[in-house]
Length: 118
Image (cartoon, rainbow, N blue to C red; front, side, top):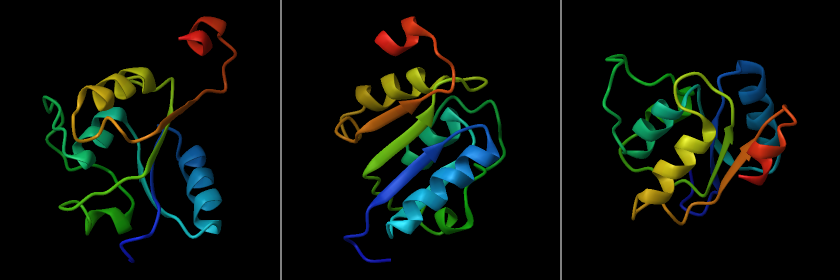
């Protein structure tokens, strides 16, 4: 992996959606790491949540070797996930001095105007 490679973190509880994001970004030669929850995303980014789950994060195989030095250029997250919503994840990332400048895109298949304006 080159140091200049663009790294995308995909956060979605849907395996199909994670695979779709991976494929779209890999076409553009981006490195993609996929996790299935907001808490696992925080763990991957080095922001340890109060760990209710002692299991290691479920991340794509490429990610496991890079857990120590993570540089993510973009985070794409689903809004509606069990446990922590994409909006909660966004708030935690923006509260972190080391991560607050990473762009975060929240996506949703639901048309809920209050969520969209938020």
